Image (cartoon, rainbow, N blue to C red; front, side, top):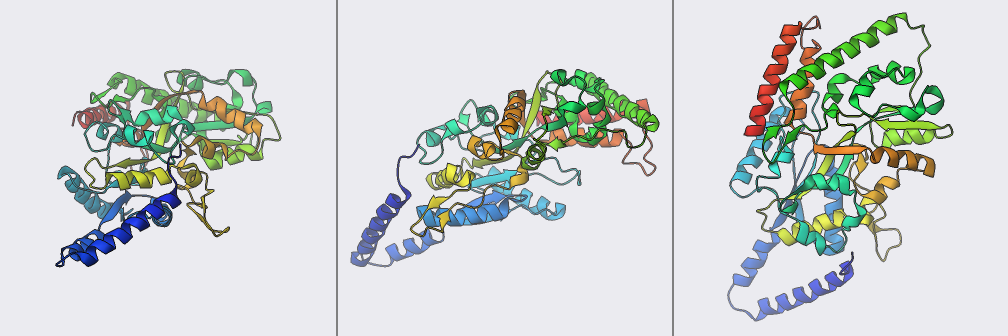
Length: 442
């Protein structure tokens, strides 16, 4: 979807500059000069976190050269919890006053190191419905570079409200497992639901469940978690309690069986963990043998995916056109696939050689995702897992609460790491559920 040329824009802009210079010479007084100085100080601000700072700086610099774009200022949220709290508080105050950064280019995940570290958008799914982000449909329709048909629509849809696309997912992930098919007793019937998964008798899968930390995957086992538009949870406290007890019993059965398992008799998986470039690289390296790959199934009989990075524009930005022009550049095939835009210098390509941090997950840009695979066999395995995705959501404070709830139910917050009693676990779940309800109602 290419409607204009970056070089053409530069020529048009040069003509405009020449004309403006002529006006300033023939005009009277210092008003034009003062206005020009004021405009020179105008900058697009991009709010980033995690590993996005270097990417944002690099891509903004190339955009400035390729499209004669605006100067850009990066506003980074520190990794230190105390510093982050101050920065997050300041930005939230700005947003409430109708100000704040023009663009958000951010990672989202569950911080498993610091329970209290603040997030700018603690529940991005809810924030979508609070008039913070600019609806982008009209801009996307007239984009110069961005081609929505080249994006994974299953993932993109999670960024839509009744106003249209307000958030642009950049990457996503899900929990996945890869085994050598020869190591499976019934490779044609791998678990398709959470119930089948937790009760599997498939030895290779069952033996490796210790590589699936239950506190990090508990949220993945839910198909529906919350209705962000209505502000309510979509599961009961009883369901959460039953799920916790189910996983605890599962953990215990694995521990007991391992005591009687002969040393060295286990079957090693090809890869396990969050699906990203590294996961699929391990699958590719073992593709000389037939493999079976599947995602961690949820209780709805599908796979739950989480968005790990996104972009959005502040609804109140004064620089709407420029902000979208930068996102249009970032979401181009040339930037996402790291090929870059050609220049007169055969070596230099603007926007090439870098892309959003590779360990964020799977690119939503389909061509960029396909570039992870070196052969059609692995590509076919990937597409099979992709077709099983039934639910997509953003990491949020709900996932954070679920993680730390399970952490406490495992006794990791106790000095002796002793398991809480059934009554104590019930109270932990109850407190967590009530807190999650209040978070959704806020």
